[in-house]
Length: 255
Image (cartoon, rainbow, N blue to C red; front, side):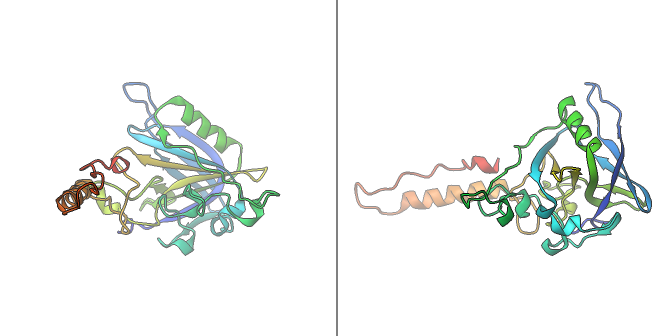
């Protein structure tokens, strides 16, 4: 379902990134990003460094890769949770999906002389609790000319939260936030025209989701595979033509 207070994007310039307190292991526990906008400062809670957080960086984009967002004015703009609004979805946005047809560099103007698209994929999902990703994030912000933050506005005003994946939660108190086309992220554009997208998700979240943004029922899926395997083994195949058995409950990509 849609986020409680809606979804949108703040466009501005980098002012500061205040690191939060550290836990018993000395790790940064989230922080607060402040952007300057034409309406004054706007703050966003950033989960990088929090326990169980993972991040992914997509680099080498251009403003043309996100035309609906880069044309927005400074300040906050609400976005409908649909593809045509400029909203992001970690599992559905072509710019975020690593595939031949959903490549982040598959536009005509990125073709090489050979006529083949330049496929520039993002990094794998990595733990975001160490100093290295936090420092890299700070460097990207400090060298940026424009920053866009997508997430959920708060009732307090001029603040964003939910700057991370907002679907794929397991059954529990956060599952009510599950929904497509409402994922949070930080987008940094520098003076050379290079654009980076910083994605965040918690370890308990999955990218294997249903059309409504709810996590695929792993146990049900495994039971289904096991049932199919049992049916196949029970079929009366002629001698010597029996197909190889399907392993029961071994769908590793859904783990």
